[in-house]
Image (cartoon, rainbow, N blue to C red; front, side, top):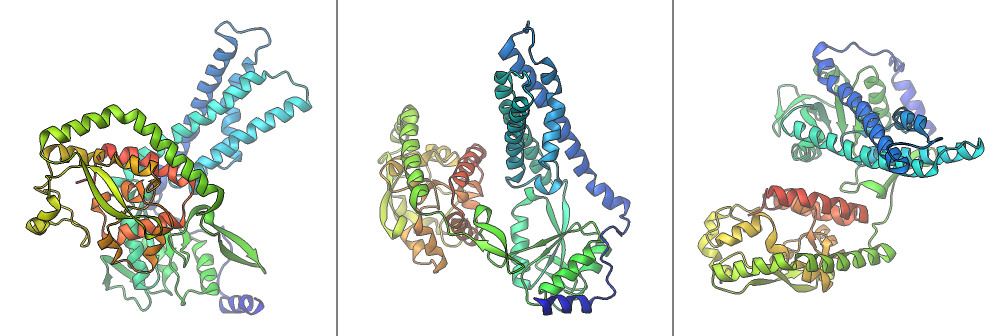
Length: 494
């Protein structure tokens, strides 16, 4: 470690390490970032308003319209100010925690719990007469309303970004294959708000073009490119040319700009609570926890899956009977379609669906092969003539998959999991893809909320592995929530 520090210090004697010496930004660059300040200001106002609503509602609920002597009216009036102060202390207004990810919501929840504990401790220590009933109602209500308000604001921002607004430019740095992969992932996640301005490659020349991106320089010119092109974010992918000292020098050089520096880990598709940075012998090392696939968590998932499936079957029984009657009366053939799929540990099971095609459709596949809109492995067609009129409606809103709740009750499937594959697909799997058999296939999953039939084969594989590597109950609940929106939109379902 001593050698590393000496090399870095002696190699860059001319570098300025004063973070305050920033280069002035152009009016266009400042304008591109102005929306961030407006967004944060609106959050502050919205947080104060929902806290005022929570305070007023709690006061009326606890004391009524007339109020009572000694009621904490000043506390209700001051609640918006105290609430915004708590959010500020919890750093819930910092841009790096906003817009994507769950950190913003965690900080809001943490601030509410901390404020409740602080009020309780102070009132006990100073013997203040604060109505506990009011506080116990007001703060949780303010937290719930704040979470809902911030989720709504984020959804509006994501829609704006999908239209090309509120973007930030990103420079990709690394080897060609890694840069191309990240470029495709950024292109498929427009709501993150990144617009690739170009890339820096080993031995790159400015006149070249790669994967639809302009090559703006080589690996030694990153800081110059950032200044020249006014780049907002630099994403560095693992490559031997950019080792520890080189990355540290790059960080120093970028301190004179407004650009953020993002470092991609060599281990991909592993996110969230499984990854943490731990100091070992003075070095920040990435620690990777084992996936949560056994023990109490797995038992909890089993109980939740079967309980939820039974409840949904009871609630949706009238709907399913109506759909069964529609399938039966509008076309010849059975109500249900059974197909062998591969489940956990490679065991096959008969997956149930409402029949959405004419009887014997599987024997007609060669007749419609020219209409394939699929991903090269699975046959999919937007204008498949084998699909019945009722079947098109069932497929668009995923109603044909409701009988799979029976598979969940029988323990063959889960509410959330990888897509249940055909045996023909499994024959084409590589070694990595067999990780998906560690869990049950799901009624819904990342594939359902990420495009369904519009996904390429590679994307489908990547999403299945990502789910297995990052499984948690919170992840399942997030996917279930997003499934409602995906089913309502009906995109990628045919």
